Length: 474
Image (tube, rainbow, N blue to C red; front, side, top):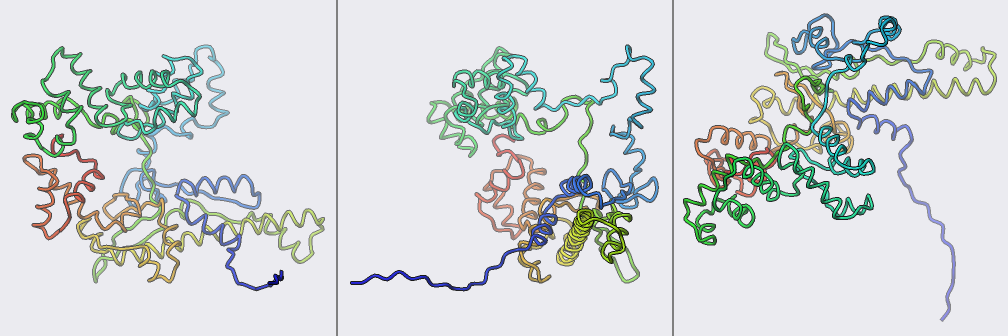
């Protein structure tokens, strides 16, 4: 038996994306805020890039041609003056001149809007209760609270990350759970309700029979209205279980942090900035009917160009008319070409986003005219096929983007591709108009009468996504 070692050379074609394509895809995927940040970064790094900004409406981001926005019909002057921004301080030199005379009496905090979120309040309050070395651990725990106020990290994770003892981590968590809103920092629904039950019991100096046992051992059955089963297992009457359920609904909140963690704690705080849309869809009435127009307004907020001086020197150097050294010539060529490529990528982003939006508007015209109930099933792959684009291009172009509808509502671009939005809207309407709490099965039956066939489990999933409580807690 003989063995031979030999080398075989084969040629194969592989597609390697060019740096220009990579840069273009990166710009396409950026959100409006990320793009603005990238532009300012490029302005700092590239002396050959110039930008002229345009005054825009603080609500919709559309360029202003007067005090009133033509798109959302808001008085932009009043809205912008109601929010404290960097420009409110005026010229820094003038501000210093005005305050130089009475420095001893001047309090700089009077120039700052009072703003503290609940998360910041919890962090500061806990840090005041524990040693300074616990500050990173406290920030980690508060930072892992979700929008409902649940703690989404385990004690073991905190112990491993911060080399703390389990007892000390639990001590901080208990201190967090003792703060308002009561129940924040709980690991699950059961713990959240028990924390609130202890608080209510201590405040009222009363107790409700069966409530603790039901929350501790029968929460799942309670959510399914299995009162008879719970009563049998606890040796109580069905009516007593029903009364305990009503007590839980009246006095306990399953989501103590909802609407608070990202909001300002004090009414005097600065309001959160509205989401600026990337695209505005407007309706225009013509003689032969209404038409929908698409404007990619990001490109209207600023005008990018190559610095005229750099452009002039670049042309002179290209024709060998400028007496430049090799290093200077390379410097000019590098930054001018970089500026041109950056501007081209921005323009490509605008064109691609405009094409995709116009295609979506054509398909979802009924949705724009009649609301979410008329939303048609649509996939990014279908849009890509219609426009002869790659599906990943459509995904990048629509990710983290927002659209202003003709009604003035700003929605995520992804809503156009969510087929179950219409079903969710029906569920929301049914719950809003219910006279008695409807179970998930009852909601499924009502949907079936409207020719919408969905399973009870699907209804439960959509209900949770809509942040609607189970019937036992409504």
